[in-house]
Length: 234
Ligand SMILES: NC(=O)c1ccc[n+]([C@@H]2O[C@H](COP(=O)([O-])OP(=O)(O)OC[C@H]3O[C@@H](n4cnc5c(N)ncnc54)[C@H](OP(=O)(O)O)[C@@H]3O)[C@@H](O)[C@H]2O)c1
Image (cartoon, rainbow, N blue to C red; front, side, top):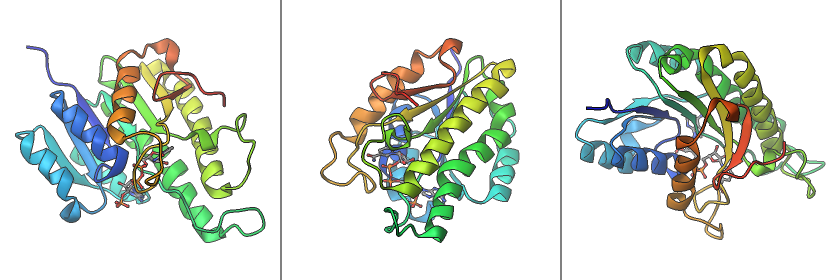
């Protein structure tokens, strides 16, 4: 029998991350579902209970580099086929031209930019044990410099544009370890971040992302994809 594949996903307690955990668990994957407050992750606990042990919940605040390293040690026996840096924040209320909240901006960079690199560094050996290891990071079309024609959202946009160059860097740095690094725009998704007027459901977004992930080859490393598999300009 083919061994189950394993995905680690951050921000798995709600929104797109919860749906990633749900869909991969339903497909029979082992899911290492990470969130910062497991005691209040009720929907995720439901998924874990239904998975008969295949999905487990792990505490990590992705801005806590010490905890990230500790978690990597706790999971040192795992082979991780997909490391999915999904956790993210929209950033401070005030981030328009002339009134960017600087503390909120720094916090946004910590969550959206620095954490994915710290996760990749901590889990590189787990992913390199996979026959086709992938480090996927959730970016946003808001982080595309080429497509920014409306301005504003300085904290969020800079955090995701900087994430994008990390994704390219990982593709180069980890090529020798046979690891594919990609990032995604998940669409405008109905979550707490995307809001009620968003265009698509988390189910639709994640179904698309899973399709793209399952077809990736080494040639795709360092690319920025939409959930529908279109390449997005940097
Ligand atoms: N929704 C959209 O339309 C859209 C569009 C483009 C890109 N994205 C990206 O997609 C990803 C998921 O977004 P979403 O729509 O699902 O947003 P969401 O519903 O607001 O969920 C954000 C998730 O990130 C977690 N998180 C935030 N800070 C964290 C930290 N320091 N440590 C650990 N977890 C943390 C949250 O956990 P808590 O519950 O503990 O806060 C939550 O699980 C983000 O990277 C976002 O930028 C979303």
